[in-house]
Image (tube, rainbow, N blue to C red; front, top):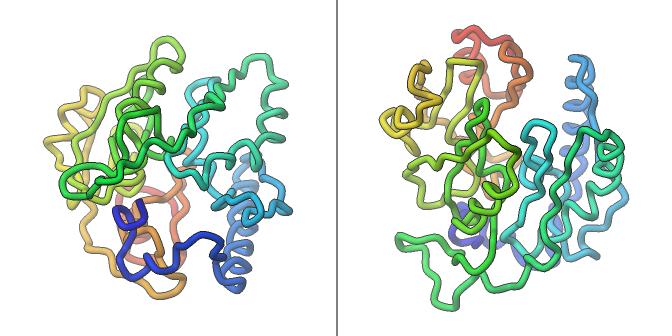
Length: 282
């Protein structure tokens, strides 16, 4: 999985029981605190998991990415069936207090993954990355970050962490009136759709021309009349902080707050200026 999805120069950093550098963690905590402040200043209620979780003791990876593990569809919240064994308890440990709080609202339905979905059968001994995904279809597997909602249409992709059984499981648990459509992408290292397409507001979408074509996007009725804009630059790599398991196309993994305002990496001046030219407040 690591070899299939990660830049080769960082593969050696990802071994069992290997911590991120403490200085990097401290900087990440500061960024999360600042990010929380930005959201709250814009009237958004922010929920945060406990800080005292020892992920090393839990054989876990992280608790920083609810976008990967929880899918919001109307009043329904769907938990991912992670492919990675190191993420198997991530939502349970990191987010159960938050889910209990949300569940107090009778309108909210929370779909938890089956507790038996983490049988370690996904990885074949002879699996390669030559034209196929490293996971098989023996059990449902998906990260919710491989899906993006457009009204009542959810666009998703198959990847090294999402298989067809996982897509079928999502479809089975969607509220009435919603549907899933799978996008055609050209990305042999695919893991998450949020560096491939980015809807800025109703009718305007930015896409990664290295991973998906306008023709592939137009096949989806929900996007047929949208303005589709390819990201016009080739993003540059960076040294600090290391990109680890991502590419410079992380510039497209921005957060749109309300169709007008968006949050962008402070140092990414090119993206900021371009998004502003499209009418966004950055």
